[in-house]
Image (cartoon, rainbow over all chains, first blue to last red):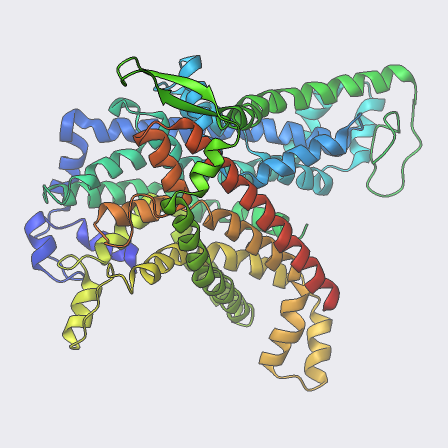
Length: 256
Length: 320
């Protein structure tokens, strides 16, 4: 329901937004609004969008690969202190992310990465819950016998992982990727803390900034609404296409 | 779990005869294991462990302005000073009352609602199942900030069709008033998460053996009794996990009250939730010690809550 309101609202100019009822069309202004969103302030919105994609897609791809490798190692190898290390990972799942944001900001200031792409990318790479899921997936998808066979054939550990285990873990990788992707795309607090250069903002923070001036300047409403719609549509499409994966991910998490 | 030099491969069923249990193989496997987990743990140390350690260190110092306040500030060791300072701050104490009230309303609505929806979807027709799963899950695909903006517009007189409808039937409602702002916030968050939890419960329900349910039906249990006494206890671990994640999420609520505050809801002040307090202490007042101490106390609350939920969950599972 709220999403369809957004759809209606995005077609209106500022006057109709207040003048007409929520689920009725005013003058059809969607294309004007879209043009406004994309050209406002030298096309800053498009840049935000690109930033969001960089933070979420690149960050999640690397992070999911790390998770899969780590989870696989936890499942298939025995080494000293394994369960203790895994306990640390599980502890990481429970630490509220907002809690470490401030010290992370201060450390990042010292390291000089505040207001760079790294400030959001680096934290996005660590996903303890992904490691937990990867271990569950590795138990389920990669039979030990197959690995044994590969070893007998003389494949090294690395080749066994890359050539045999990784393809088997592809659905797990996609699931973890999807979870990290939503988390990064949603990460508002982190961006708020780490960035104050407008050019580095993700869509979230950009919309927040626009929204904060709507009460003084109502013409921003159309920008925020249309901008939100533009930000939401690709996500919905992605979710509909990938629903097989988020379902399997939720199942893996639920029946531990 | 196993001794350090135990057989390296954990087979799924019967351990197959090890083709060559020689030390070189094990060494190469240990090396591979180290190679696979090192990048993650290095990053983990940088991004999680180091900040936590640094927060503990920071929380022990206070910034004192020296001299007449012109010479900048200096850091003074203050032991637990920041903790007592935070605890004696009325705003900080109240922020916990706020989230306690919020949780008291939110968690039953969320868990009860998503459980009910999952049970309904579970008993719906096959084709309807797919549709409902997708339709209910979709809000979760919308970033929290955008969801908050949309709902806040839906709460705003002049913009909101909902308020128009209420007005049309002669009613009136103020989503931002003292009495209603909490339910407005619960509604906003529930809208985002209810479908997500519903899908978890639904997935768990799918794993319940059909024979158990059929047996209950044969014994004369109605649909409601079957749902409450058979299905729900059998998915207990999913319920406990969901309550756990909902709690951990609820205590760090930030985006929604922040936006309601920006919109001018009178009772949502700038330190309404603990995370808002931390943000204000750290980034507005630059009192890092206080913010660190407050952060750590919030983290401890999270761990304690997790412990309580897991313990209660285990007892419940044992009882049913």
